Image (cartoon, rainbow, N blue to C red; front, side, top):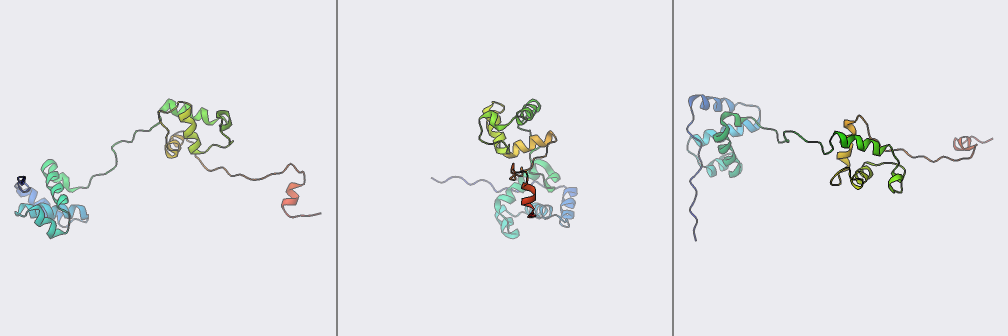
Length: 176
């Protein structure tokens, strides 16, 4: 069975101001703006998406995305948008962060862990086990929550000491 082909996608007729703005965009410093202006002007001259893609060495999907963006946004589509989320919601709310702080003031041994030093991963694990979070968070989420509290997290340095009263002298290499 043969499927009917869709009609080729073209840009809508351009006004004089739009055409002037697109031609000015051909001198833009940003490659994104330049490429979109080239695509839109070529489409306005009657070229198909496949012809435009071959002409500028880009994917036909890029051409179709540009034409659809222009139809939806107009000239605003010439500036590149951020790909970041509009607002990142912290995974730990205010009361949860305070509970995390009180949790970290206790020893990991209080929670049945075989170590006396907290790590970010261990804090995430214990927070989940204690019902502080619905799912186990990453160490990075815990680090960001602590950063909001004003706590800088650094790896603990461990060193060996001795109960020997002459340990410091022996360690320094001084012999009597």
